[in-house]
Length: 196
Ligand code: TMP
Image 1 (spheres, rainbow, N blue to C red):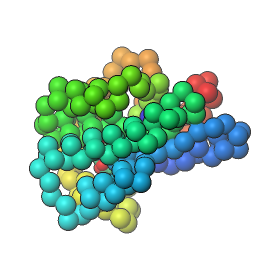
Image 2 (cartoon, protein in one colour):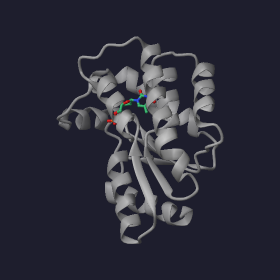
Image 3 (tube, protein in one colour):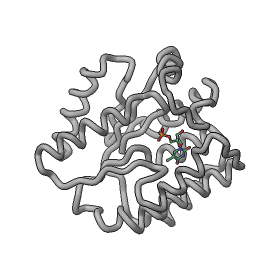
């Protein structure tokens, strides 16, 4: 699982890792959430449309609906058969919907457990970014979705939420994306090769 707030570099790293798997001919799939399967991509368009303005609970249910489609169409079939790389997953829901938006944590955990049943995440790369760099990176992004317009206070809450989830856990690696990207690339690769 590759997690982190906007502009933290997770999409860049997941792409590198997937190129490596391709080169090594190791079977894998790469998806993003929201999105991934055909129906989930439809839901993604709905949620992330700049003009969408849903209640926070509707938001939660849409992310979960997208996840449920992925579970039935992608995850169940490939779990333990291929390497599954996911650009955002369970932690994003807790970080954004609970720590960012204030949705009840128990509800989120309960729906996740209903959808994913016994599927477990093996390892998470959490990409973090400081406020100064976040500002710069967000400015550079061309296709702002509605979350990219949220303020920095919101993103601090979300990132702190991610860090709480990673705290004292062995199956997390926190990547400081304020460091040179090449250095982070090699840190991620070292760990990733061991995992594979
Ligand atoms: P991204 O594809 O650029 O990362 O954008 C996806 C957005 O969706 C991002 O702002 C985080 C948000 N999101 C949630 O709020 N909850 C979730 O459960 C997921 C998967 C994403």
